[in-house]
Amino acid sequence: MIQVEKIHHVAYRCKDAKITANWYQEHLNMGLVLAIAEDEVPSTKAPDPYMHIFLDAGNENVLAFFEIPNSPTMGRDENTPAWVQHIALRVADLAALIAAKADLESKGVDVLGPVNHGVFKSIYFFDPNGHRLELAANTGTTEQYQELHRVAAAMVEEWSVTKRAPRHAAWLHQQD
Ligand SMILES: [Fe+2]
Image 1 (tube, rainbow, N blue to C red):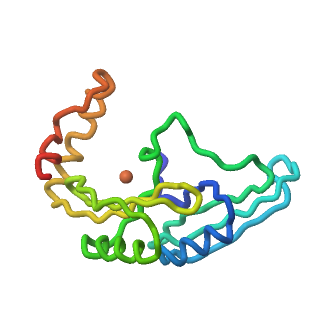
Image 2: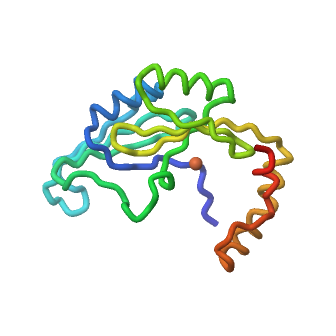
């Protein structure tokens, strides 16, 4: 059986590698780990310069970006609402989340939240590329996470048939 150890990196496009690396350093204290650049696509050798930057998201998690200046301007999936695709980063606790909000706002970033998701709270904002970012702090109990895990497969199964939100974890939203 394949056993994935962890996420090695996830990669998204960016508009400008230097601006992106600087923004993540200044706003999220995420340092530049590696930069890999080529003037041609490795597999096809087609000329298409790229810069691939790898940013430190803590605990050996890596968030990566590509700048590909020869491609048409970066857009987004217009058929998907802006809140759906996002990158969520964990902070230590609720105090760290509240402090992060104040810190980001002091640097001119528009921040939404904290939003209560029952077992974690989140704030939301955008990076300079239009990627939606989430900072999340876990607030649930071990029992709550265990209960969510217990009903997860049944919820997906019910959803696959009804396309309506199952009620197994309705207690999550009754705490608001
Ligand atoms: Fe999320």
